[in-house]
Length: 198
Image (cartoon, helix red, strand yellow):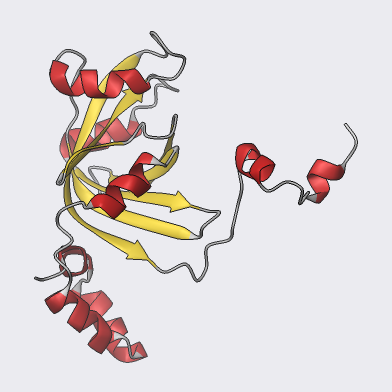
């Protein structure tokens, strides 16, 4: 089955550069005979559930890309079904750049990073903006993950994403990084920062 991510993202300009630098044949095989990655499987669901942040790219009405970081407790980005992911969007700095972009162009790209294991999942899709109360069933699926337990921060909107395609990226240039919790699990190995007196 054709690889949707490759067929969506490999523009004619990208293909010309792949030809020029010798990678086109491999990517042509990927485009034609990919493993049918349109549907999220168990590996993708497990990886997404373990993430506590991701980067989301949207596009302004005049074509400028914009990337925003989103964070929360592990699993705040939820797999709803094999073609849908969603997250609750909380009140922030009130710039509304991503929300504004999505109101005129629903295309998004998400980067999900696992820095300790040098793994990256890229997802492309079409996002919606749902106001609180617009889809109570979906909101109920996301609300238990609100940070702080009962009420937590105010949910301003729910953003479901219809997944068009995804791709697991190579780890060649991913620098390992660790949260404080991950560093604690690496004991007794200590970093210079941990050895410093407080």
